[in-house]
Length: 105
Ligand SMILES: [Zn+2]
Image (cartoon, rainbow, N blue to C red):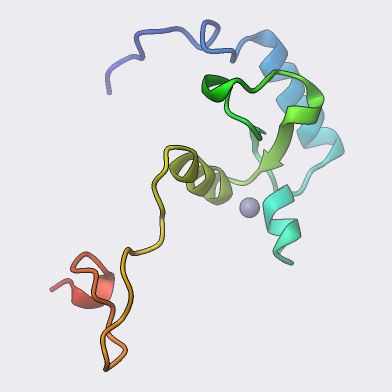
């Protein structure tokens, strides 16, 4: 794996971010997105609700605690991608997306 060209610090993930993550893991504990969906999962990722790259701040109000799965999904969504298979289904109910697991061999 190549090292990122900018440091964690330069991208807004310095000491303050580490402290916020520790604070959230102590006080929030559960993944906030899973909680909204009625699931229970331990949160491990301090997530910026509005990504720093999109003008989000490092304020507490812009932070939420997420589990790895929810963080991965949100990261994709923030980049305008979807973790869900694209497209709909045909008349038989089979997904039309060639990359859907049902259509892989
Ligand atoms: Zn979650």
